[in-house]
Length: 345
Image (cartoon, rainbow, N blue to C red; front, side, top):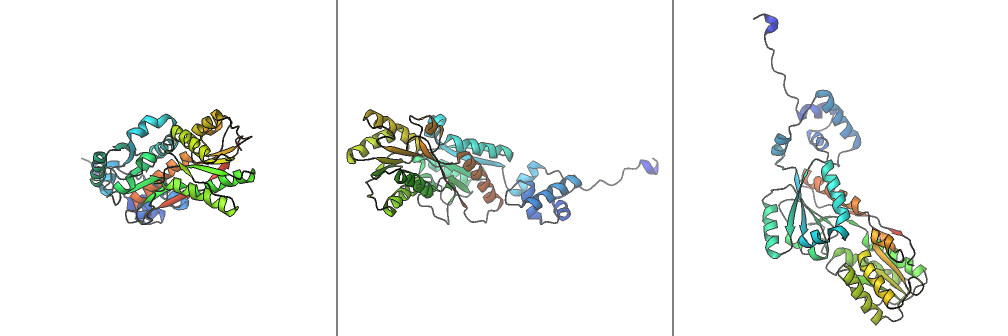
């Protein structure tokens, strides 16, 4: 064999430390940038990507997951009712946003069923067994028990919607400013000259319902108006209809109502029509969610907008932050609310 034909030494594989050194960042920052964690600054992330491309760095997904003790999969906790109501429920839009973010990060999404007491015990064992890297819960009226059931789980859990106890040392969540949104809705009714303004509130064991109720009450108090007794419903159309009937019976002079969800408002509008009340000639209505139900209602419904798809995406981003930094404290992100004006006021 000639000297030139002899095989040379094997080229050393490029490591993450090499990339970090070339980019001028720490190994931890390089790792977060490679894994797409959004806490890395834009300039540092660009430097890491450029260094990785120049050096030919190719992370091994399986080895990377093992080294991190991660599965690259996250769970979405749902109930049978969530599935049954999916086409028309609040659940659908944040779910769309969450799945978009999951795909963008090349993660696997695992659906976990909760609802019954036995389901919750099984769910807790699954999470504590670290079969996924973390979990997301889209809180609805029928799942408000989950924050208590999943408290101090061995993997991070992020809620969409503020848990009613909202322990800042325990719960991570993404929400909209429900208190501020309710203030916008009630102020809209007061500005329209309405003086007996009732509310159909959500379940009192939901943080979002508590916050919306407080916003309504505070605006009426600040304007020196009487605060009628609120009526409660379960964020369903039937619940809204039944609550509207009770509110009309209790407040014959009612001329404005803030309804804490568009779905409940659709039921309320049917009862108002059946009672001969004209909206908005006799009574103004403001909903919450600014969903397609608001734009297709008769009349089209003024409603407080929630950026639901954005909230679903942000829920994934927050969960990834917590997975990347297990020692980080709980994260609470609250987005601003806006009002969309239509013909019901």
